[in-house]
Length: 377
Image (cartoon, rainbow, N blue to C red):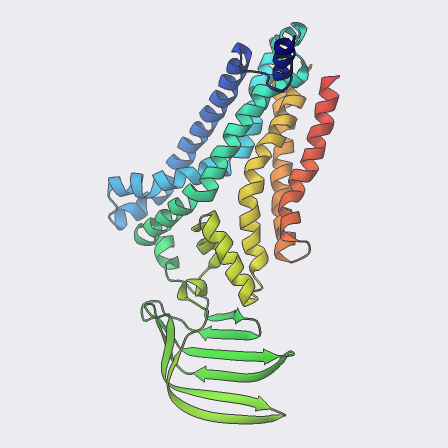
């Protein structure tokens, strides 16, 4: 009796992995891989046609084009369209199963709708784990190599390689700000360099140099001449000095476009970078947090989109597969649009970064549960 009870208990929480599960898993992953592969090939062909003039002009070898650029470009494409094609794959093959009355046959043979979800859940888990591995570790390194290729072999990349804003203002510590104007990467030199210190929203000290050079080895800024000013009790102390040699929490990497910088950081490096920016009191922390939370929230959306797709397409309808795919794609694009809108709210500090990133998942998670409960009846 004890053995029988143990077996029943085991079956209650472990559905097993049977022929039906393998069939659905194969359909799901097969459709997903085929769709992603087809889109990737199409995008790569169009991208190659667009950039071919640059490749010829800057003499990029075929080996570098394939292994230096496109091999590093593909992981980004796969992850970028993963959610969309997870959804489309579920809608497509499940609608075909419903149209061919396969779903009815499965349910008529004693398989519950909850049990039917099991292979879908496993497929979504595989896709989510793959997406996390890509966004956490693989894509950052691939993006670094991709940017390096673009900076050498494409006109747009070469122009943006050492592109810095003329006027750069960064907070390097709480109450301390650095202003850099006219920075040249070739010379590692700024035409104008200022460090300002504030207390209670009032400036208490500043350091100004007409020219300042950054030493990448030591991480220090140097200048032959500079001016130091101190503001005490309404009085200004003005000193002209020589041989500036100072270290501040600001590297030339941070002087550039930080959007590209964070894309090349793996999840651990990104987390450390965010902590560093918080310590500095940077006003760009929310933008970096969006990148961090998105790398977690977006892969997990595979479960939500799979549940919505199954719930919508498991019944045979008059409109056929086309209508179900149309409704599904419309919902998926609404999800993507909501993600973009929420990110803009986070960047403007209208709402916390974590809430902005997770809000689409929360809303569509509620929709998924509602549709699933409705589909079970």
